[in-house]
Image (cartoon, rainbow, N blue to C red; front, side, top):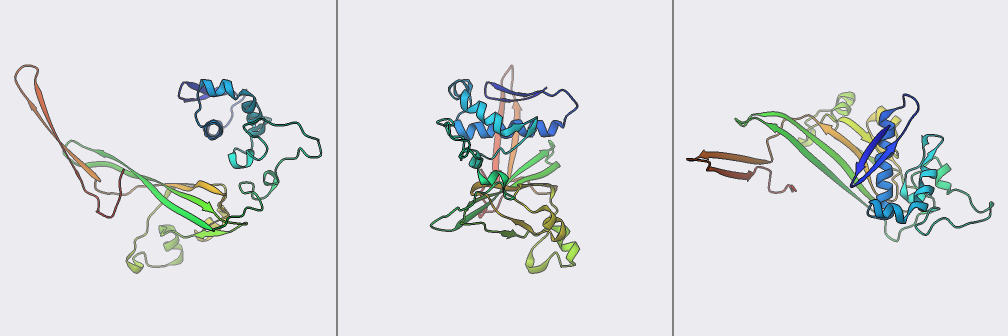
Amino acid sequence: FVYVQHNNLYLCGVTCKNSNIALILTYLYQLTALFQDYFTTLNEESIRDNFVIIYELLDETMDHGLPQSLDSTILRQFITQEGNRMADDSKSKPPVALTNAVSWRAEGIKHKKNEIFLDVVEKLNLLVAANGTVLHCEINGAVKMKSFLSGMPELKLGLNDKVMFEATGRSQQGRGGKSVELEDIKFHQCVRLARFENDRTISFIPPDGEFDLMTYRLDTQVKPLIWVEAVVEPHKGSRIEYMIKTRSQFKSRSVAN
């Protein structure tokens, strides 16, 4: 069995054979996010209050031991917080999005104003020795998007990727820019992977609302954004004095939190 812990709950997956452990863990984490999206707070009380809806969600997200759609936007079209009402067999059909080639986006979406927002959020992990030497440094980043576009738009996004520059023979210092070497790239299911492998262009039809387009990792040497200096001064007996100094080292136009 495999389990993940959330608050005071354990979500457990069992298997009778040597299954793909990463698949089970991914399903459990996405199932946790789905429950949170439905119930806002996932705890023992919300499980008791919504056990009927949870049974329906489990039935739709898992079929014969294989994970199915875990997109809350699609599931909300036929599983509401008021429960599933009885209907005629002719009317109780799954949403078209479930059987579409683009299962993450429903048809006929309309917005009064077409807008799309993109944020790049990066986390810096550093391991620094006592003498101030940087032993290990990596950046974990995510490209977060919020889409309010009508119809079925196809978007394209280009990056200053080192592999693309090498493949096309373009200068890496063109227009004063620098190329980066992205590792451990993980895309949202809407990205056309064949197109990315071919010309490194991120082509996709975005889901409606907020989603993570991609996550990545960078192995690069950067100076610590916040430098911490500690001075330890022992005194007689059990008394010891610590003096901690912190100073920021990132540019004024950057924001860190």
